[in-house]
Image (cartoon, rainbow, N blue to C red; front, side):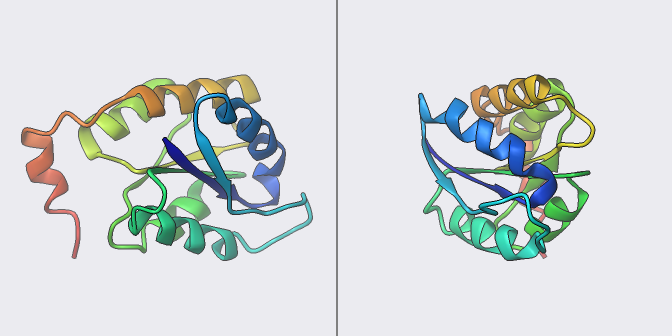
Length: 141
């Protein structure tokens, strides 16, 4: 699977570790940042969301302090369904019920080990379709 990953300075440390974790089973494209220096997250989120929306990447992972900024920004893209998760069940449900294609992690509120578990749950879950597909189809404006 092709995984896009990015975020901001608050998520930099987790992003670096997650890239190594993911590389064992996936192709990973890093959308930055490349250091923990302060950055404007939209500069990294928009290219990632474009790549996922254009299906150049299968799924996306975004990491910032609260996950709010990256989720809000990613969801401006019509083909993106970005969900914030701080528990594994939320990540699974985001895929199963909402067909989320980007997961957003709050680095300041979850441990790295928890972040890894959340990502694993997100990647293993599958969209259930059915009644959920009808609802997901109503999301775009």
